[in-house]
Length: 107
Image (tube, rainbow, N blue to C red):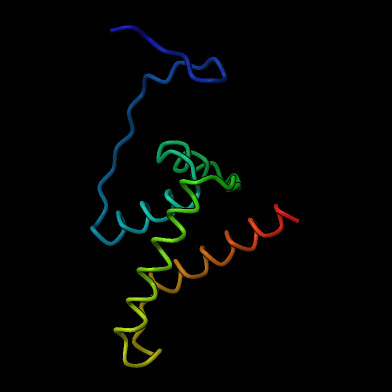
């Protein structure tokens, strides 16, 4: 097996793994999709308490569109706002921040 260096010349030969619940996995996947980063890059940045800067691209746009469609369907399903769960509210907040950032990027 041939070794590969990353873009900063580091050997990345250590493997870190951990278990999460279905809900946690879905939340992580949503955050990764909205960031436009790979899951590895996203998790490393978050663990190092570094900012995740979203670069607008078609993949991010598609993730935002899909998340908004999911949120719309969930909101239609809810009978009252008091039943909304924390994960949905967190995702809505993340999408709003991302869209505000993308709007500021185009100005």
